[in-house]
Amino acid sequence: MKIALAQLNFFVGDFDGNLDKMLKAVDEAKQQGADLVCFPELATCGYPPRDFLEFDDFIRQAEKSVGKLAEAAVDIAIAVGSPSRNPVVEGKDLFNSVYFLADGQVKHVQHKALLPTYDVFDEYRYFEPASEFNIVEYKGKRIALSICEDLWNLGNENPLYTIVPMDEMMPHKPDLILNLSASPFTHSHAKERLHVLAANVQRYGLPMFYVNQVGSQTEIIFDGGSIVFSPKGTVYEEMPYWVEMVKTFDLDDVIEDKQTVLQSKEKIPLIHDALVLGIKDYFGKLGFKQAILGLSGGIDSAVVAVLAARALGEDNVRGLLMPSQFSSDHSVNDARQLAVNLGMQYDILPIEPMYNSFMDVLKPHFWGNPFNVAEENIQARARGLLLMGVSNKFGNILLNTTNKSEMAVGYGTLYGDLCGGLSVLADVYKTEVYELAEYINKDSEVIPENIITKPPSAELRPNQKDSDSLPPYDVLDAILYQYIERQQGPNEIIAMGFDERIVRRALRLVNMNEFKRYQSAPVLRVSPKAFGMGRRMPIVGKYLS
Image 1: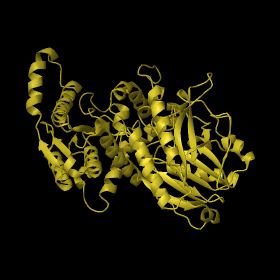
Image 2: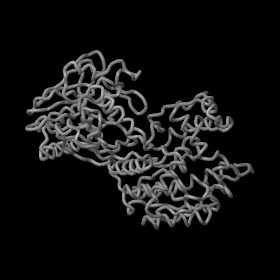
Image 3: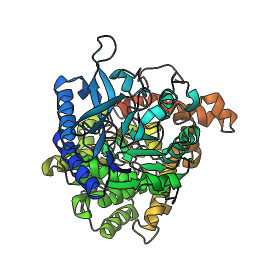
Image 4: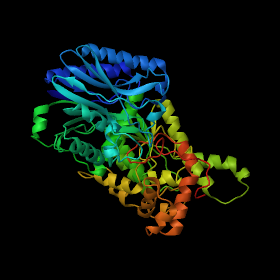
């Protein structure tokens, strides 16, 4: 048997586009001599569909797509993920299912049993878990069909679940495992995924064909990286990340374990490529082409400008340099040089006249109080006003350049530098931003070296440095990682050797600035715990206040 894995980029709710893409992949698989072609989880409607699943018309269109695919399942079988209706009144209205189509009809339907409801996942909100487990026979092979999380409770070791789907299927004596996935990217997930899948293969002694989708759905990014395992538990081939591909594998060759192909899993290159894809798909799927951002001469805006240029093309990225009376000459020169290096359009719009006008109006109402954060924020909001004005006039999407460290502790101004339609770096700590800059410059100087080496500063008051109000970023980021990604409390973090005063202040800042994050743009997710739908905290809470 020859099995094709169709690693494709789907669009939530675009039934016609998704169907057309799959029908073309069916033809390509046929040309490659495949007997069976496999598509990812919920491929008909795209993942994650979220509350679209509550619309009856949405489900009808998914059913129509399955019907069209069944008609195409002639001289080839198709395994495809799609929502299906639960005929039983009790329980949720839908299943998350894989359809096995052959000879022009639906031969078998297997539902997903393990429904993740944590971090960015909320499947139990919509789906009923499977209670029956059967296999399908095709061309003399007995196939165990599974969906994504169904393989993530090996040996009943995951305390979230009480059942092991593959254990339920093994009495039917399958010859191979097919797993249809929509497994979101994080910079550590690729290694974890290999480990979990390999452990399954070693436990059951069966070859496995795992197909994952690729592409970005707002904040969630999918890397592809579909995998074929030999029955020994070794990787036969891991398909490339970030690209759509249909590739056919000969089951006999896989069983004989004739080759091993693995992709690189270096953290910073993965983050770089994920962010480029995230920007590209966010714009493409919304029907936009051009981005705008503020170029401050700092490292965050520089990295975002490069990523945007690589995602959209330098002709589609515009930067505004908006110096104030506190901006240094080298910041303006650095920003200008970056724009020249990238070949992108830039404009210089000094904000001092605007700032002075605002101050003239506000001065009688400030009652002679000394310069403080209010005046600083007026500068940031003046820049936000200019950026949004140009964005509205020319139909650009404003890219937010705030990094995760700043987003965590509230080191940003609402309706100012937190403006934007997409937060590119808000899941990338400041120390990681520096690593990204070095990676970008690995072959030639794209980002001027002075941007990378100078002390970071918001330049909202004379001689301001980030270190005036924040601990060094290497210390701050280590504390934030323990709190945000690992959910460690202050006592546990202090016990690791961090200064108690710094820890308590940092964690308090994180909690008290939740209201800013609620009002911020969607964050491209590249870590195991990103701000947004995967981290749900109350705005009003006493913990660490």
